[in-house]
Length: 114
Image (cartoon, rainbow, N blue to C red; front, side, top):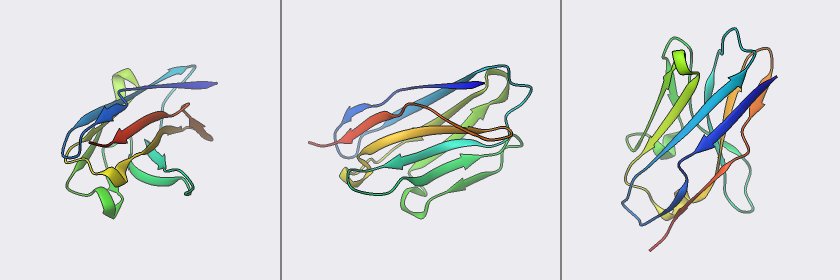
């Protein structure tokens, strides 16, 4: 069983920054892919960014150049540094990790508003 604990969400003004963290715990020999999805009200959950254990990254076009994903394999933790936040980035952000299946965090709210 893999458990994911997210932190770092909150309210920020447009143009501001936030850093999300997600730590995985449990009996985990290794984690393959980790990353973040987000779901805005009334919309589908969509991929924001993901990163492999080897450090290869993938980003949604809407956040390229503003968000950076990274991970610490020793801590089984993935981060999402978000800059130049826009109101359209408002959503619940969900962390995921894959290891013989996909595991999800409970979600953390990010609200970008003045």
